[in-house]
Length: 98
Image (cartoon, rainbow, N blue to C red):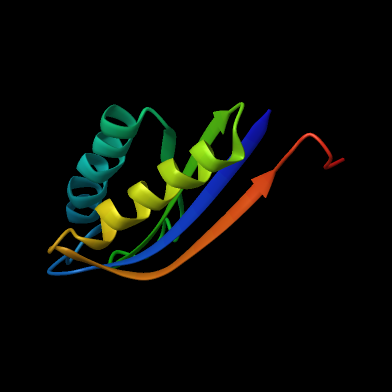
C-alpha cells in the first residue's frame, strides 16, 4: 500500500475577507475530491485571507498511480485562473517506511 500527500500553497486573487476566501477555496477542494477521488481539505493559512494551504492525499496499491493522481491534482489547481500556485510539495509513504 502506498500513501501519497500533496501540499498546495496558493495565493488567491481578489479576496478581501475570510468569507470570500472560503467561497474561493471550497469549490477547489470539492472539485479535487469529486474529480480525482482523493481526500482534500484546507489545511493551513487559516487566518490569512489571501493565502490557503490545501492538503490532498491518495491511497493505492501502486506508487505510480498515486504519483499520477497527485500530479494531475497539482496541474488542475495550477490551471485555475483565479489563484496562483506558489508551491507544491509531494510526499510518499510505502510498505518499507516505518
